[in-house]
Length: 197
Image (cartoon, rainbow, N blue to C red):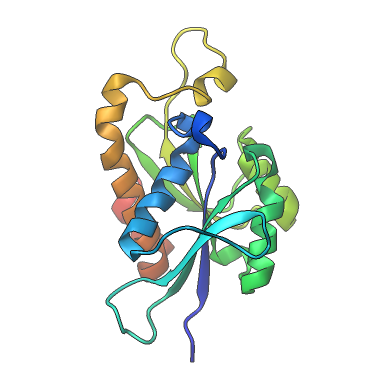
């Protein structure tokens, strides 16, 4: 019997202009997971995303969980359509979808993992919820904190990490990638106990 497929979606905006932005933490984490799988990104036949397919765990383990990493080619407010197309293609139900995204209400450097919930004004989550018709997918929420002073939220999420944050960012990315692997291999409650800081 083949292992169930998990779809892991990094939320972000495509292109070099956005690469270092706080809003693109999802892309950074899926890049780290792709590096761990040892596979390059390739265009998916749906034409709306780049994917990496692989298995978690030791090479050659027959029942190791199958994982599809995805980076939609659409902008944040339109990621739902591309993600739903991939979920349909790979026959993945919403409860085996993991969205990795930035979270304003969590301090930078901290992480929360959960199943379901609202979108909290996050356009990527709003788009996913709209396309799936449910919010019952997993989220790995990477904290970015609130904007300083009177800076607008939109300007804050679409700006680069500070110099201090950039030094810490690799640790946050690494931890978030660990949390994704844990969620798939060990389940939600164990992962929440280990990673929800």
